[in-house]
Image (cartoon, rainbow, N blue to C red; front, side, top):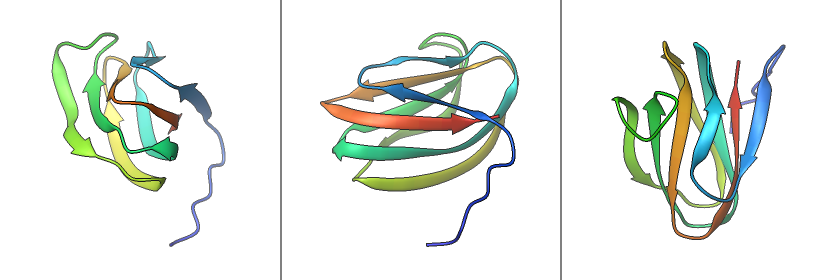
Length: 88
């Protein structure tokens, strides 16, 4: 796995769907620490609007997802999981 350096940014831990950021920014990636959830990422402040990353099945590990969002960042989680979303 490549080394990823985050010079500035933030993270949010989620166990259920939720808003990560309410302003434009950059998604760096998602770390799944437990479970095998399905995840969907929105360029929005809610589970509506533009889909940034469509539904995918995630296993435990880091999922690099370099993407820009222009409205906000919202993540939908289906199933039982603990994830951390990294964004700037």
